[in-house]
Image (cartoon, rainbow, N blue to C red; front, top):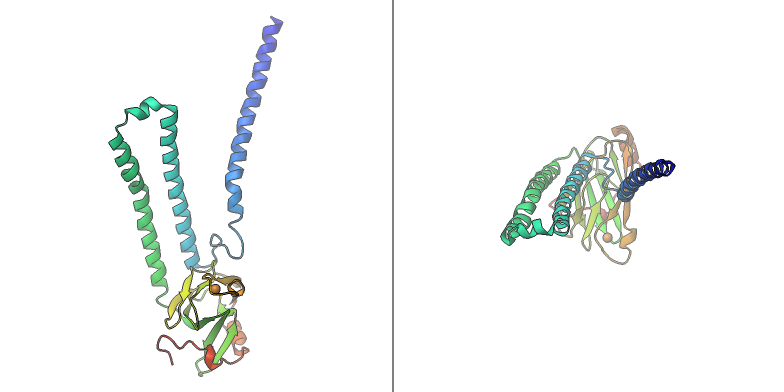
Length: 262
Ligand SMILES: [Cu+2]
């Protein structure tokens, strides 16, 4: 009698331990899955957006991740079915595997993702069409030259630091003096090529004042790694104006001459 009570207690203890172990394993698996996401923050993170364009790109990334996870989950379920219930899997005609798994399943997940991605891309493109202030951007090995034209005809320049006002969109006219570079400030907008003889447009907008890091995202020679920049978003137009007024005048070689501007 005593023995049976003891074994029941032992069984209950093992049951509790097993439940705790399962709970711990679940928590551990969740932490292991979420840990890589910690690396998604930082000054060059597209997943920590600080402007409307970057926010739209980050949202697209999360939707794509959700779609890819859903598709992976469905494939793993089918694989598990084939291993754990081979009789059920054998009962499915090969044509159904091919049509269902090879055509219907990807179409079900990828079509909505494609529609969403195209719509987001179109919005980003339209957002580039206008901007309140214009700044010319000249990329050359290995620096970024920003030129600001004031109403009185003065043209000033800053090297590797772009000055703008937080909350006000700036239209950048980007070109290159030598090879192809790529302008990229991950927390504010997507990347765009700086191509010799051609001007590309990018609208940049920072939600709040601060400093935002940017890089050249296209290998452009031996010092490509050092071709970095900072966007300084100031708190008011007056502040931005004062900073720009204090900059040195632009030299002829600093000016963006592609795209029809004198
Ligand atoms: Cu580069």
